[in-house]
Length: 402
Ligand SMILES: *Cc1c(COP(=O)(O)O)cnc(C)c1O
Image (cartoon, rainbow, N blue to C red; front, side, top):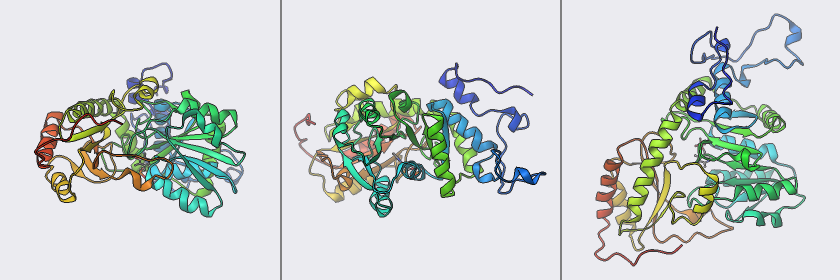
């Protein structure tokens, strides 16, 4: 049987094609076997207890192991732990860090359900959350106390796409011994490498780009070191979490084309973002790769590319009925949650409903789009006819200042 391949010296494209392939655990097949298993059988009763070997299939079989290997091959780190959803990965990371009487510092721009978890369950367990301005950078040092049990970042943030100065926050955290975790879903682990910037844990909602086909839920927590990996796995086991083999297979299969999709969708998104930026009915476009983005310098310094999710704001004064009519006129953009799939999605968003530590001042209605694999000219034409329905005679003065 061919030997497993050392991927460390190979480029990302090659790693994505080969990661997780281990002929020994797949009977020689290119792809791992799907074991639908709970019980594992042993010949020797001594193997059932107190041994490091796997004794229960909840820990994951060949396909989950292959997926974990693939995640590490893309994003780096010492190990990955799978979770039943992206939100499950966020809460697993937070529960790994939580301490009775501790305080979690959480970016004000986090994914809404992450915030809800902090405000409800973590709080009930005696862990307070203090939200900080996502643009705080190294000034986070002033918020770190002996009670700080973790610092949670998300960059770019959900809704308004602020970029965080992750190296500065990680350096301040390390100086005080505070652990850091980043929700790195937007970059898919491809365009931003948290561990190279001093972050301890990275969360991926694999439901998005890794699965890529809008047909599975999964998440992962990646760890910078074996010690962190061990802590996350221990929490995982204590919580009784697992990830099913069929969904793990779908996510691994999606990852084979991850880079192709990201590059195509990212390029189409940037093209559409630039076109929207010049459209008279659009007040501003919020896309980290645009020169007009207030944190563009951080994107240029820390990111190697951009995915296909961004937002734009309409000129002020659009009535709710007009907005509804505009959204309902779209033929190619589906309206719904999630993103990162092969199909384009659109949703109106209200950034400020979940903010307490920072204010976001939108020019007008904010609309988030996830660009799929359709032809960008077709998507542009669809958006154009929709924007035409807004029906202003005179556009407001441009450009709108941040
Ligand atoms: C979607 C999303 C999640 C949650 O992923 P699910 O698999 O839908 O639970 C977490 N973080 C971010 C930034 C997301 O966009």
